[in-house]
Length: 139
Image (cartoon, rainbow, N blue to C red; front, top):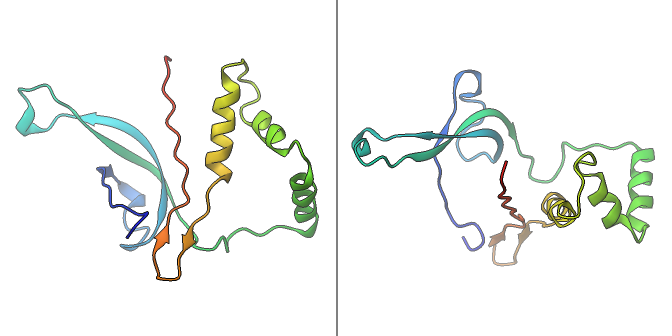
């Protein structure tokens, strides 16, 4: 469907993580990017990327797993009403990493974590609300 184009990447799931979710279940995976050399392409030196899964959680469709106390909800409401909420949140991301170059990176990460929402249109089409961020840099 529109907004959810099928894409694929090779994931290696091992040991206790196997069979944790039935097919079709939306999951979040925590992975380590790795490289392997296909036996058919051994002479070319071309390597392929795969992700080695080290953790997995099932996604809930409607946020039903999140529960907050009334005191926490009140704190969220107060924070949301502040005009500088965006600055507060961006400064709270990795506060030990500082520098003028990190300001926009931290803002992008906040948008990625809190930004988009999924939408279901009247005709049944689902649109992803995911915001993707790609960070490249010199270690």
